Image 1 (tube, rainbow, N blue to C red):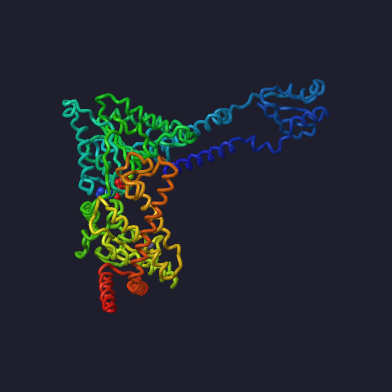
Image 2 (spheres, rainbow, N blue to C red; image 1 turned 90 degrees about the horizontal axis):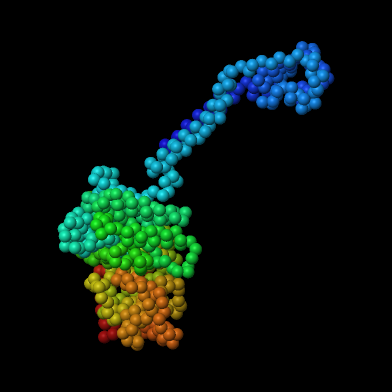
Length: 619
Ligand code: ADP
Ligand code: MG
Ligand code: ZN
């Protein structure tokens, strides 16, 4: 149970205890039950059956003719005479009654009464003070310090040993980004050196890159190595339920930062606030817009010698408001790319540190097989391998686990429990055999690494293929080969069963997208070197989308025709080759049905054998 809850319970118990004491000390409350009402007393007076009345405070004790005592009570502040008069007792009937008025005894009740008014208020105030204190301590959410910045401050000269330290050595594969960031940190440390030459210190540095390449990691490293105060917060933390909170938080954050100059202010996932402002879209976006405007205003308001650098990180640079990217704001961009083979090897090495590795583990081979993996994927891979090794009760991680983890990260866990029916297995086998056979038959296609019909994630089976070399540039021939390989699963099914299945849906989607890119993006169709559709300017990361159609309807028709032509031609290639090599297709499929997985070496052997048999037959 946390401290706040404990405090609340203690307060409640105290409150109940005090109420109980009050009830005990207040004898009137207990007497009340045998009192009669003043009006019934008045009636008895009118009937002349009362001979004496004693008044003490509000309490009334009447004695009737038989000497029996009757308790009652009058209104506070009104005399007994007036009260009785109001109830229809006239002075004549009251005269024979002997009225004695006593001073009220100033007993316990005398001072308890005002106390009973004040005490609840005191308890109430105390209660809220405790909660507020708790909230400020960070235990109970932000209910009480809305307008303060939730930014966390690191490295304020003091060492906090709680968070593990990240150094530049823990980051690999993004050397250029590291160098650039080091330079920026140097600006902060030695501003004089740069100012002497009239250089303007960069205001904002934007880390851009796909998810998991180490943007947050790099910022954490800067926090640790810069030796200046480092404020860190996530874009979405600015946004609250109430409009205006984000803006005032921004103001508070910048004020705080100015107090701690020189310092670094890191806003992670900047796109949460920095999204493009859409004129006329209206509704629901005001809060984000106000926050964004406040950030822009604060960045513009920096004096020339303000020694604050704002570090932003995002994986959606194309969605950022252009105003954020203007000079004087986030004018420096540091691009973090997916690591290449050398980078991957280094990252794997970093994450294998401190884990027992079997001598047979070859990290370079893992790096070879993981193009397109981000740093986070690789970290995940090593972790999965360790878990696998532990499951098998091994004392060290061996190559088998590492390679198995590649597929796990890539495609999700093997679904051994999901048993394919005999028929499904067969269809799946012919489909994958088609892909594999096609890939080996085309000189420009990628090498086959593994074929499997064990269901994984969403896929019923898969063929892993990798480029012979890592490349930055792809040629048209390679694209055409890729298209044919994509369509060969579909074709193999059609040729074998004269029937189609849903198993090819994902292939067809990829093929259609690729064909469209060939036509509209790479100028590889009949139109020649023309690009169609307006894309966002930040194309360097390669995930742009067509945002505007800048061609006529007639051209749109022709583009569609060109796309269809690419697909048809690729299918024709697949049909031709798979028909020619039907014997080989059947052979591969049969082995697949029997073994479920075929590794690279096995596959190459298989193809050679079939080839030899094939030539013999022909001879
Ligand atoms: P993002 O770019 O999405 O912010 P993170 O910085 O959060 O990615 O990376 C997530 C994790 O992946 C890191 O904590 C680290 O373990 C691993 N990682 C990512 N990139 C690298 C890298 N270049 N070198 C070493 N580890 C990395
Ligand atoms: Mg991140
Ligand atoms: Zn397929």
